[in-house]
Amino acid sequence: MDKYGFDNYIFDLYGTLIDIRTDEHADKTWIIWSKWLDKHGISHPAFKIMRDEFFMMDLAAREQAKAEGRVKYPEIDVIPIYKSMFLDYGNDESCLTPEFLDDAGYAFRSASREYMKLFPGVKRFLKEIKRTGRRAYILSNAQRCYTWPEICEFALQDMVCDVLISSDFLCMKPDIVFFNAMIDKHKLDRSRTVMIGDSRENDYEGGLKAGLSAIWLGPENLAKKFYRSPKFNK
Image (cartoon, rainbow, N blue to C red; front, side, top):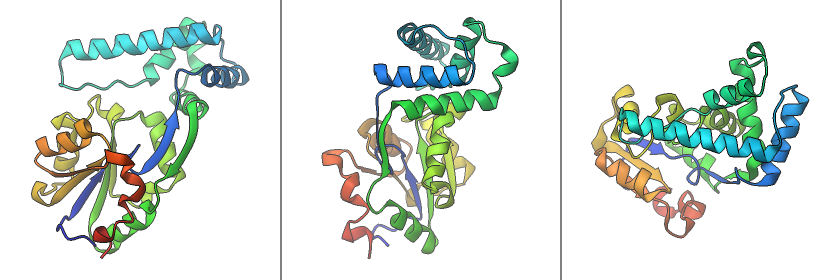
């Protein structure tokens, strides 16, 4: 398949396999989400107040995680933030089940999304990795409540051996702890493993520091043509 002798391919997700554009701050996003909350009986203030409160709580959670110093690059899980907000707005805790909160998180993501599609050639590339006895993995800085449904929308979970999402580990790339979570779990040979992603800091430099080979897809939006490159399809 390629000339470099890799057995294991670790992919970033957004900007690497999935081409996506979102705007979490846009009025439209919060108006749509407010209507979704109304439909599901969730009390809340005006969308601008709710937006300000969410980002204040998000920032506070991230600053607290940094202050704790558990890892160098901490991640948060937004689900507890949603729950805390909804409780503050007087909603009954019995209604705020894990399933509902996941749905609320995905509804917000859907409201923020302008478009989402796979980069050209991604499915064929992943299928070829599998066909040739090699292994593909996904290591993503993201929130499970929306990332897993988006992965499933494209059936990527059937084309890779495993998916690790930063919100589950409260740690994110380029932290070597997050890379090691994947490497150690699957006993990957670092010398025969490559990290592929669009972020120079998180994917390329992070992968190299973890002892992997790395390919940076950042320049000129390389992901749009990478999976159709002849040198990776021989």
